[in-house]
Image (spheres, rainbow, N blue to C red):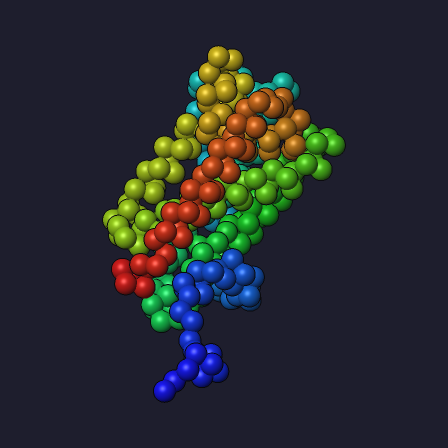
Length: 280
């Protein structure tokens, strides 16, 4: 007859909820080398043995700047911020906007491109779309150098506000990451969702203060307009690079909106992550 003492001496297995779920955020750090591998691969594909990647990083913001400067500055004759040349006003806004738009586009297809790996090997899937931001950061640095050249050509040096630029770059990254994760997850379940992204990006370009100063927005609409997280990011870049006026309440609202989108994006991605291997 088996006694309670005998049972306590025998080995037993305890069934717990998924350990992968329990240690997910710790796994993100454990798999940091995989993140670097994904990022390095994306950079190599974009730039290795080709001049198209570098040229595209240079031409895209320049051509967009020229178009928006002509449309809003010359034809619509919208005012600039004080004595800031209109071309610099637009190009300073193109830096965070291009980072956001490119991150959204690249992240949307990232899980599909890595479908073979995702369906066979465990790792935190959040690493895949997050790694695409590294390539966009390199494009950002290239565009930033171009802006410095333009500022030198216009003889418009930055002031001490530029020391805050890293903070606004971090805000731009967080603003990009939330929607990028959400879109990446949606694209796994709804493959035709990738056709919506170009329209969203194009629409966002014109409703965000890229081609014009947000100061043209009426005071009674300014706070509501700042619900667009990119409004505060763009104003922050212009303030730190060009010394443009900053609407601080709007920045607070935009930062809160960016945080909200990040929380929603991570939550929706994590909620759908369990089904990626089956759907992909």
